[in-house]
Image (cartoon, rainbow, N blue to C red; front, side, top):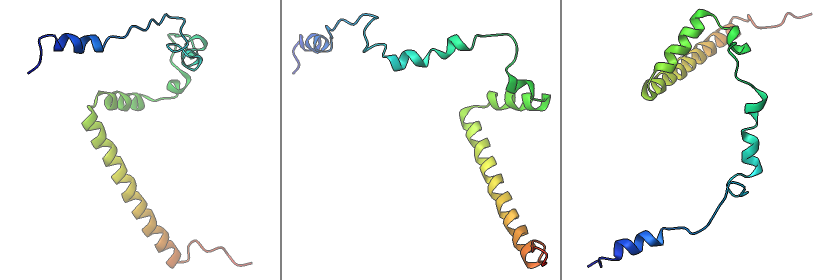
Length: 110
């Protein structure tokens, strides 16, 4: 049977007496500091980024739709796109074979 001081002993065994201040290299290594430095080079502005300026209304609506999906729905959408890509690959393979048999892709002889 556990002693009444067992829980207190367990809690005390979890305590750390190590003192780390903000200047500690263990808390903020140079590598970690550098990862936040991009915030100073790219200030927040109200203008849209360049990649977004080229989007059409349909593209923005698609982004909003995809952003509103749950994780499960998004995974289902990705699986559907993978299946569509596979089907397109099969169809392309059939058409290339067909073109080969019809000698469409042959280079003219000189």
